[in-house]
Image 1: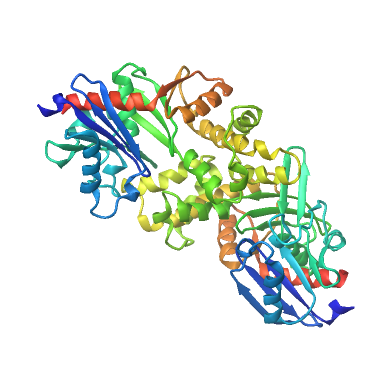
Image 2 (image 1 turned 180 degrees about the horizontal axis):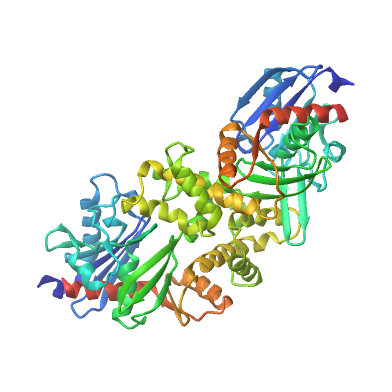
Length: 294
Length: 294
């Protein structure tokens, strides 16, 4: 069938998209990235946005993951409930064009009052499992706009929890009273470590964030340390939530390298063993697996 | 002296300002409010912005509180360290025009790693004490963009802590993935109460905020309840931090009535006795007291 002759995998998020041309032998032949996330596509504009992708990467069948399948995207693909593996996801693809453009559903978790959703991370996580980049019973930490703590069992996602760390840091940096202080790059050093410790030990994030500014105003902290401290504080708080009840052993930290290095450093400070996994590689692994299951 | 012949009190914040013309007998004669907060005043533009105030309220001496005295404002008035009463604040006024326009300093608190600042709330809080609206040894909760938990002893501010609740709710409402869900007005009902309970009992705010959306997507919560639940969650978290180590007894909740009613309701849910105090009345009381001390 056509998919065996190569395809285009698309990771289409809220604010940007990445496209990859995969050869029949699985090799990555070409790729592109731009800022045409789903929020920048006008109503009715998806066919044209897809035509642009195709003019760039070629006339091949397409497999799309991420927010493109959400209720704000192109074609809504309902969440697959946990436990969810590649088989369940392949069985629930939505076709935007029959046999030609498939939309990958997200995964949901609901248990008692707990409720959570993901879109896009599942391709990376299950791809990493299929390619033995991650064990079949691993705990995965997937930082991004929304960090996901994901439990795997026998190669399927059994539960997960989202922490809004990335989005909160962005909101603080772009729109809050701290924005001026947070413009510097985050560095893994003493200020970052102090923030991580505070986040791990204390549960007063919404107060502690304000004191980042007060300490600088009162000469108790260096202005240049504020971004690193605040990042550490948010990540430490994230770890405190995500590690609760977590099994011992290695933790896979998957995503963009500039984020996984921060979370891996913080996990080491918390006495855990992180292993970083490149999210793009994992995405390609997952897309290849799904293309074989179509 | 001139101040006894009446004056203009100004509460000049980040995003808006309020001016009040006070008669020699202390009566409020006229008032105005507009959106000319300090951030909307161009560099070098304060003299003209002040002339506008005067053309509106009259040619009287002026007493200014709030962010106008910050490092982003007109004339920086350094923070008065705790313990701070009206006397200490009157002694630290900065004069923008000698004898004619006084800028009220904020208050700072520093102890060990703790560091905090306020600007504007001190006039309300100490004014309320001077007029016996609040006891001399009270605990005050002052919601606003940044909620302040303030300890008073013998009529002076001895320590305080800021929680960024109001700003966080605004950021979520205006810029986050939750914005669409948070557009409805917050109501004190079952959804608000459930949020308050969660915030008081659990320390996972940054995860729980994301689940507000997930619950709606998965049909476990009503879309119309999301704003009230999220507000309750943030306020419950705020109370958990502010009530830690707090003495028993009444808590004065001071500020704008649309905010004090939410915090008072949440405090009752937490088993405490709140008493609401109108922030504007308290501000005028504080301004009158300070004018007498000049």
